[in-house]
Image 1 (cartoon, rainbow, N blue to C red):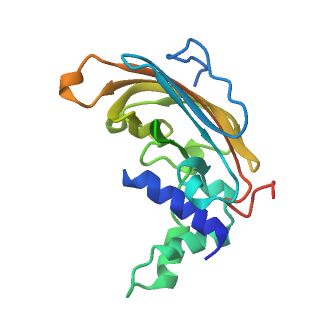
Image 2 (spheres, one colour):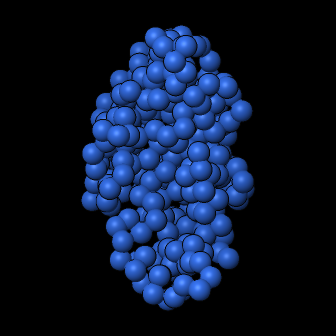
Length: 222
């Protein structure tokens, strides 16, 4: 199994198991992140923050702090990823051919910031295709998943401390998205899932800077 496939699969499984302007609801301005990784600041009914440091060549850590995208993988990398999901008895070659015809083939973009203090996963809305999220700087609206349209983003499994929340609105600003790294900021409003906590809404402001050095063979940095 190639390193690219291992890293991508590890990240994707973690995400599936479970932000347009520089406005930041939490702090009034976008966070400035130093180094590689991610940082989130929470205000409102709860005040806290967390920071995750990105480290190269660490598959387990990459599944918690990092990014995954088809854009960083070669066709061979993607074929290996698709092949790894073929079940016993299935036509392996046919599954790979059909998988390579899909759009997206695996994932357009996944941003992951998970620590013991909090976690969230940011990704394009269902039915989004490559044309909706091109590999370049851009701004996107974050919405409730059930209302999301292709080209918008959603946040899944938002956890702050021991409590889970649902994002009601937000924005994602991709300041850099190329073969070197994906970096930017986001701002969110979220409501608690517990009925007894109704009205205890929170605001989040975050920043991320995830290099592409080992996730795929198309990365510029080695």
